[in-house]
Amino acid sequence: MASESDPLHTSLANVADLAEFMYQLHAHLGDHELKPGEDLKERAVALKIRVPDFLAGKPLIYEVHDHKEEVLDGRAIVLVRPGDSKNPVSRRKIICGSWGRFTICLECGWIWCQIVIYGRF
Image (tube, rainbow, N blue to C red):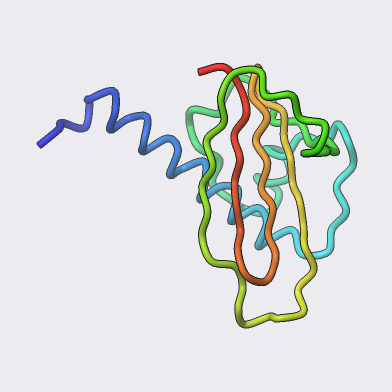
């Protein structure tokens, strides 16, 4: 069994914390329109959402992101989970943030939610 100080354990725990943060942000934003350049961490704190410790030090800047224009410079990690089946008319929502050399996008609809992390790692 791997110890909690094992690098793989730490990496997976951070990914899980990031996913939970993005899902909570999506759930609490409702119909609030984000503005390009807005710090998503500041918005999360205002909404009483726990910001993962590893995100400290750099802002997570909201940006309008067009996946069609994404040039994959490096690799991508994709996390998918079921969407909000209780609300079949929920509109698709995309939240993207730039954090250092990474772009983190959450796209949610009725059937599924996905997080895509683009960058060099």
